[in-house]
Length: 272
Picture 1 (cartoon, rainbow, N blue to C red):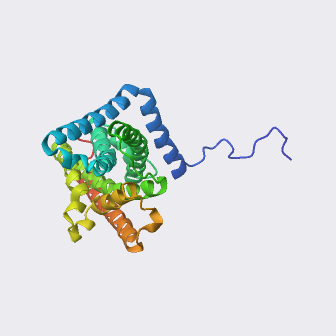
Picture 2 (picture 1 turned 30 degrees about the vertical axis):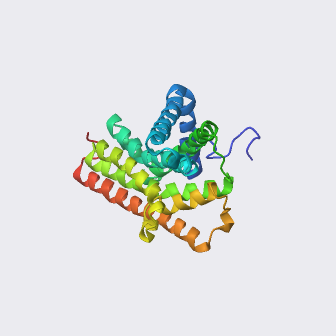
Picture 3 (picture 1 turned 45 degrees about the horizontal axis):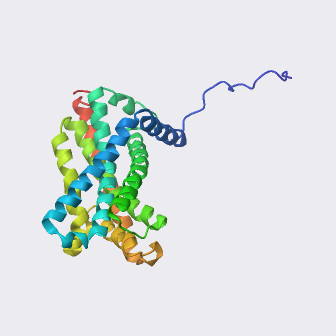
């Protein structure tokens, strides 16, 4: 019979890590980056406000009263654009940085696999982007004197699904970055293409609803400007939003998988 002070066999053995531990680790990492480098975090908010100021006051000089009548839509569109840029760059820019630093192999050797780690790091950055973009939105509403219908459930669900499709594009761009290394100019160019996608509902083209952001942008405008609640949208509209989000995320995952596998086969995974 063992004594009370004896520990059972295997008590000192480390427990296997789970996806919960991985998610907690990447979220904590984002929190540490935010609090340890406050100047950079605040700088991102200032830059976002600066660009909106240029858009707003420069547009007033050109469009005058026509812009003032659509200020609510511009505020909502800019809010979605900041979220989209954060979701897109969360994967593509992060992988590009890992390639330059020479730390990409650490992601490959994790027991979880490369793609799940990249995905959870992207989700963690999106959570941070949601918080900072919400702060930017609050300042925009205060500066412009605009009033919106902010139903948290509708905003989070619609905006979250809308930028999920952009996360898929970020996944694809991350895979191409692993394969070709330096494609930063092309990645930055695509960010400005989000403006066209967010503005797509204005053109009333039925096929544009299948593009990333387009359908979600239209629904978000109705939710935040017209005050439409989440349960007031049609089932078909919400189903299409989910289908577009899942479709582009899976497509981006496939591109990421095959691009990284080809980089392994060519032996260029860790090269820069």
